[in-house]
Amino acid sequence: QVQLVESGGGLVQAGGSLRLSCAASGSIYNINGMAWHRQAPGRQRELVAAITSGGIKNYVDSVKGRFTISRDSAKNTVYLQMNSLKPEDTAVYYCKSFGPYEFWGQGTQVTVSS
Image (cartoon, rainbow, N blue to C red; front, side, top):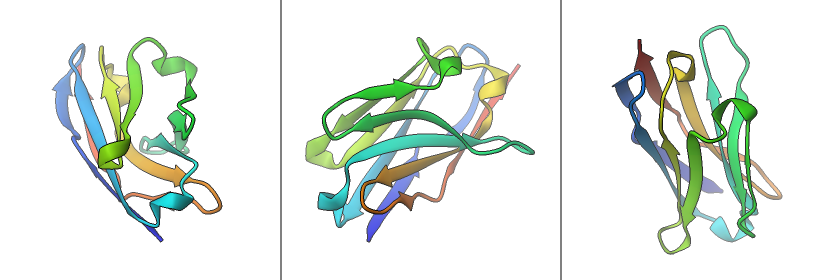
């Protein structure tokens, strides 16, 4: 089992920034990578960014150049730095670990006002 705890969500004006954090604990040796997903009301959950254990990063096109995923292996924590936020970034953001099994965090709300 892997436990994931997200933090850092909140309300921000368009053009602002937020940094999300996801702290992993438990059987972290099974983790091959971490990802951030988001789900807006009435929409499907989508992958936002991912980082593998080897440091390879991927982003959905809509956030490229604005969001940065990073990790601190010593703290077992992955971050999502979100800059130039837009109202359409409003969603619940979920952290996920992937490997032999997938585990999800509880989600953190990000609201961007226009």
